[in-house]
Length: 177
View 1: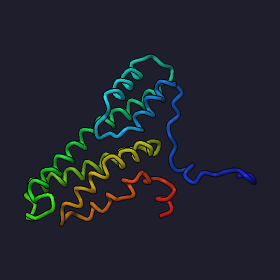
View 2: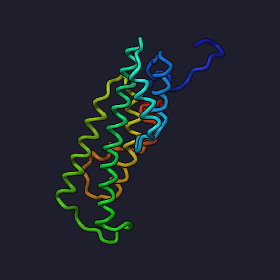
View 3: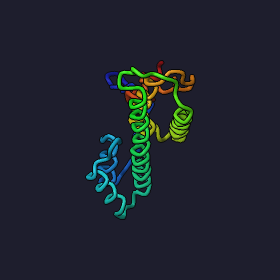
């Protein structure tokens, strides 16, 4: 740090991967920019085209493949979360006027969902923190909605935080907390 130089607060916390091929880089940026709730056909097409071309940037191609696989998985998992939330709404009413204990199959589904969410987040390596943040942002809000609709969930559900859903997970703010 020299006199008059700028230092960005989160420069040491999260780095984006170094993708040298411009077509792969554009596909990566497109994937990271769109919502993974429902991937647009144009982005899917662009990513598949980028991955099908020959390139010397093997590491960049692997990064884009990993992000694309994660996006497809999150799209499917997010659909399951929304289906479960809609089942809650049908069961207890939109405003909770018909509250009753959760059936065992719903409790088991919630336990399985949380386990898979935690396992998936923990599967990312230290060099994939950008991908972990994107997954937390995409799935976190849906997990919070489920958490708000149920009482009596285990303490592990406290790990699904609003900070994780805001995109600040892994940032300087979280490191200081």
